[in-house]
Image 1 (cartoon, protein in one colour):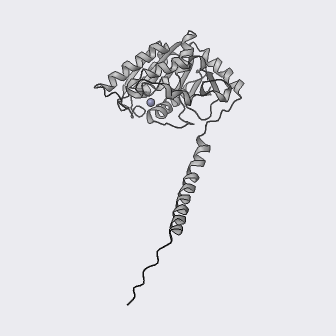
Image 2 (cartoon, protein in one colour):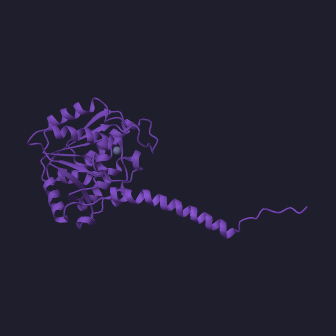
Image 3 (cartoon, helix red, strand yellow):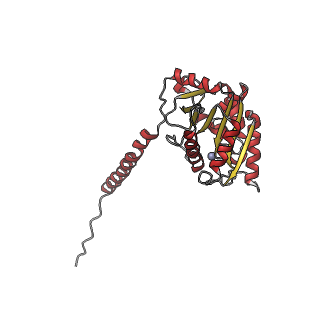
Length: 262
Ligand SMILES: [Zn+2]
């Protein structure tokens, strides 16, 4: 009896099938990523002139309070603005909710939270912060910790700032979101909304709809040096930051952007 060998698909047919399947995956991926791109892309909602003018107004602050989740957040996102503020004579007060014990430990130090506190203090010296308050709340759980809101209220009432800087919890931009960033900012923003007339403007950073731009071209090297103090996080280099703070949208070399609420 003659065995009939099953017909093998020709190689070109299998290749075509593979290509069709890859194309299907690519289309599916694009169907997810393209809308995400349009939702999350950063779009300046003011003209460059208006945004830079609002940035100059922010730089006129006399007492500024910035609240973040971890050591290194300030230097990453608003280090240039804070440096410019302290150079202009502002009283820059900052709150760091956690000691960042769940962050990377690239240099394998024995005491990560203690080391991160020291790194933050070294960066604070470079950037001229008048005071750093560590709330010591648990990393990745600061926002839901019942101590967070009363601590923020106490600090706010002590400092009485004329500008508040926090992450944008409502319209954050990519690439990096964290519960201690947007979560803590959400609690702080809800508190700010309870303040009555005369409350200071709140400047939201890492926002995808900024309308304020601070030209940090003149302090970019200092911002990089302050960020580099967080050796456990970046191995002692802040160079990767520059690419995320280009100022082309407002016609300068480097800028930090905010969405202001009044
Ligand atoms: Zn962080």
